[in-house]
Image 1: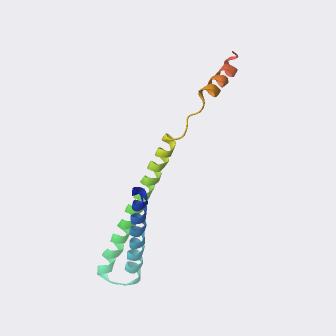
Image 2: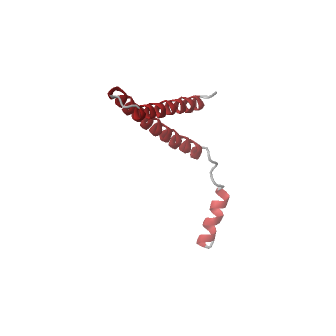
Image 3: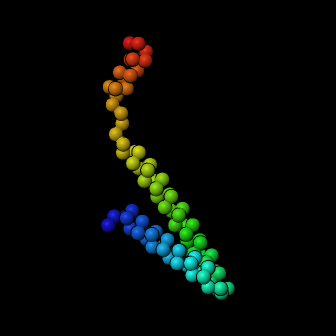
Length: 84
C-alpha cells in the first residue's frame, strides 16, 4: 500500500467517524452530545478539504507528466498559418 492510498484510507475512516459523531449527536438530546456533534462537523469539514487538496495536487502531478505535443506538428501548423 503506497503513501497516497494510506492517506485516502485514513481520511475515509475519519469521514465515517465524523458521520457517526454527527448522527449520534443529532439523535440523542444531551448537552454533552451537542459538542460531540460539533466535533463531528469539524472532522467532516477537515476531511472534505483534505480530499479536495489531494485531488487538486494529483491533477497537477498528472499534468506535469503528460507528454508534450510534437514540435514538428507545431512547426507545420505555424508554417500553414504564415503561408510559408
